[in-house]
Image (tube, rainbow over the protein chains, first blue to last red):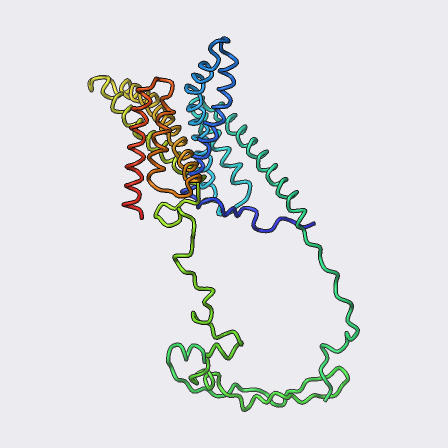
Length: 170
Length: 224
């Protein structure tokens, strides 16, 4: 069974570690802001009286989606920073980095709630990231099945097997 | 040892290593075999290592004459390393997604810091210096949490819209220059305040367009 090669963790489209936190922050912010626009737009639309639905939708978007964007952005930036820190400490690239970083991120975001909230948040976030990484690895294996090479048939057996390893008599 | 003598420049004379020319090897069939290696007349390694052409790499392999002239496909021309329009400057960027992510992230964090500082000053000034430090700290934290993320979120949204519109305009025009930046800044400023009325829209559009224009000019002056 062919396994994934050593290039499992090598993603050349991302920048090296200190700067990638900025990029991840911005990307997560944009995802949160645009997703929040859709979500709160629909929610504000549906929760407004009939004659004021558009205004209600726009007001909800203006009030809520930047906040959601900021929350996503902080989560993404913190996760990326912890990921870089864990990679620097462990000096390896594998899915455990993301899971450990998720553990710390979940804990850091729940700091104001006390030790129990920190523990629960950390475990929850680590499980979420374990699921994400597992699904990612599953997809990679599925995609890689289509490019698996078959081993060529072994060469035919040699007939002269006794001519090595013996000193020629004088 | 011959190699180290060559490197350190010492000249030594060594006798040939003593050996036993009487040694014979026994064939499993019982006969004896004369050794064909006559190691009495061995010379020292330095006899050939010290000759001038000893380390000629061309003698190793047909392709061993490696130099810049013959292997010009391996020399990387610096100017051809990246054809992307954003690859030339000190702040490199691979395209619209890089611009969007880095621009939004940096703008958010800058605005967060500015808002946090503003909140800190405001919170500390709200109470006289004679008040107990815990109260002042609490007031400062409240103000930071109120001002910082608000400014950060707003600036991040404006930056996101600006980068998106800038990339769209650049894509449809085919080139990236300061006109795109100013137009994108104006449009995103106007959208940001669109629900307040025409006059705030124009004011906000003007402010963001001028900020975008000055950033484009600064970038061109300093970084390219």
